[in-house]
Amino acid sequence: MNIFRGAFVAIVTPMIDGQVDEQGLKNLIEFQIAGGTHGIVPCGTTGESATLSHEEHHRVVELTIKQVNGRVPVLAGTGSNSTAESIELTRHAKKAGADGALMITPYYNKPSQEGLYQHFKAVAEAVDIPIILYNVPGRTSVNMLPPAVARCAAIDNIVGIKEATGSLAQIAEVIRLCPDDFAVLSGDDPTCMATVAIGGTGVISVTSNVEPKDMAQMMDAALAGEFVRARELHYKLFPLMQAMFYDTNPVPAKTALAMMGKIKSGEVRLPMAALNAATSDRLKDALTAYGLL
Image (cartoon, rainbow, N blue to C red):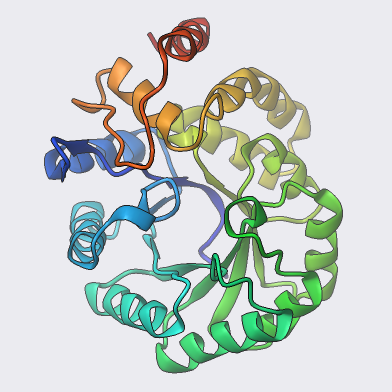
């Protein structure tokens, strides 16, 4: 059975004075596991992978795997806009003991559908580790279409996709074209319950950073077909999901975690910038309304 099911957290990378806050990351991982999160995803977009050095990227992955200690699956972000770099990061994740690798479609260079297929095929052939594709056109300027996903799904160790288009039509086509055991994880919190309702297997969530328990319970309910309960949790979580995108992710999530006392600083790395005062107040109101402050 595919282990990539339920609510995985796209975990933030805490920072203090420009450096990775290692103790802060350990504390966050414990908060997540105590809340029932089904898996941890370090060094994804939410983990600011784009501005981590290779040394930092390696360290965050290693630290996460060590702290989790086999309690839940660790899906390490290893994608890049360079195939050679993606192979290097994926090799490291395998060596470090990750359960799988999350690989974003190459950003900026805008590959064709054939280029996308060849990129993922090259990494899959180079590193024998379960690979989850990651399609997020809003970040990358390229949309990996369902036929290309289906071609990749025919490769043994490509076992799923994080689909962050927010398009249920595209997600349904991916599910229709791919094998039954291919994991389809939502990368868009507001549509994650609906994704499971049409055959998806879970979510890689930003909102789980601040509310792991309710996100995990919503996915558990949806996967069990208990949609009255899942829908109740969806509408409870919905304002919080919206709050996580008051500004560019992960700025609101890190700010919220700092407000909640879960990390010492909500610091983000340039070119990300801190929330302005008005947005910060809105975020505080949303957290208070949810009972997190």
